[in-house]
Image 1 (cartoon, rainbow, N blue to C red):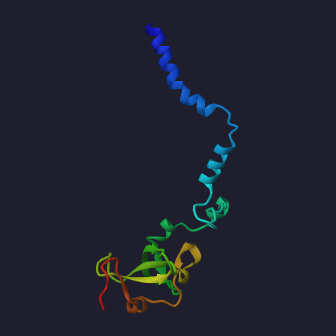
Image 2 (cartoon, rainbow, N blue to C red):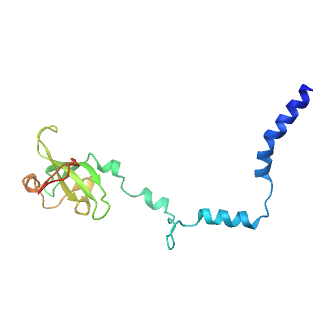
Image 3 (spheres, rainbow, N blue to C red):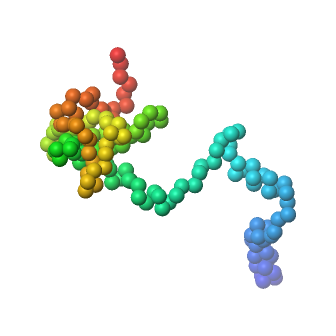
Length: 148
């Protein structure tokens, strides 16, 4: 009797597994599956495949953040603190300018398109100086809305 109960329990546990393993010839189930994988909005495009080989030669943001920024005179004029990609608009690099060992520095936002990768994998900001960067409006991570 004990053996019969164990065989019955094993059979009940195997039924859901067998149901998934059985071949299907159900067109209705296939159309439901197709609807589930279709775009959720009319006219919405599916994500396109990306060429992984081409990506390997790209620049990772983790390698940009923390990098020093130089001008063409090879002066160290700042350090990339962050990269921000706004919901609309141009991505920017947040550059820390001035100060000593992070004390007294301030942040400025530079369009990412203005930074250039120079020789020896150095980030360049052509025609920029520390003095010029200090004249740019300061950037703050404060999320409090400004009143004006």
